Image (cartoon, rainbow, N blue to C red; front, top):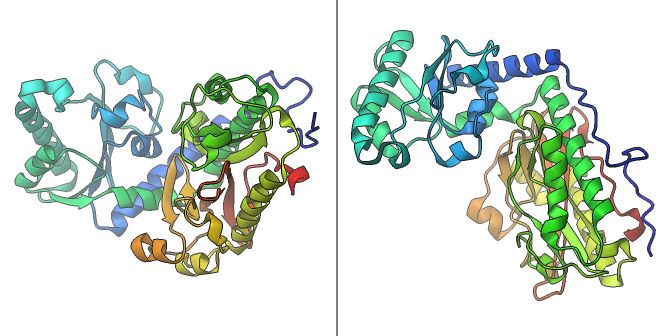
Length: 415
């Protein structure tokens, strides 16, 4: 048996839960900062308010959550945040009590559902009721013909708002810009999520053995996340053996065999709604890797280290991409979808395309700023190859470069 010398720091008994270090003061500070970020963006874009339906945006602005995954596809709760005025939350039926004590919220009302699920053949009727209330509230606090940003909503309701004289502004980019820069208190919340995630990674490391299915192993990450107050995992990206190439195959009931590569991408939404997006790879049974497995791992690790070393405030997206690590030709076809991406309450702006044809097709410029959190990506798998390696590191842009936030160790023995 190959001995893994990189045991993670979980103490003598890795089955014991961690202690939550987050204080109420930290949480209140993060709430205040985030709401002000939204208001600053509204003022910068000359918008009176923003109407939020995306539950992650609602969480960012108000620190309220309710059926987060369900409301990603059921428009059943929404919020209005004014640049100079109140924060009003429209909550799902009989859920007003859920947010008692959250001082950011000035008023909670019962939401009007005008989706087909909630309204059926009465969509037009319910949408009209909804629109009248929104127009009345905006008029009360911002006057007639105000500019209202909207992050997402069905077209019928938007048409009704416009018919009432509101000038609508695309609000998704506004929220992405607000969420882009993290405060010290936000980073404390994120570090706790990362610690929980790495507890789950270590649990998977300790539990994995030949004969398990991928799903049985993946369940341990969910278990540690949920028992520490986490919320959900956005994807199911864990694969073994031939299912690691090409990447993006989801966890399955495949039985893992000794010596195969197992690789995963956490995409974990943990405590307080923050995301830990980390990728690692091992062999099943923790046996010594083959020469080919070592080669793939070393290349992926090299790509991440090279690209991390480039990151600094003031660096443009274009310059970063042009100076990024050159993927060897055999691995170009199966390259990952981006070089780096932002992360906060979920994967966030920016997501930077690779140099060459990817940049020409979908690249966009911008500038890295201090206190952005970035995930640095790599996937190495030859087209038609047997296996592949997915690695990813979560880092903070600092004054002098970047600080690694994800501390789960690499397989140094493989490098």
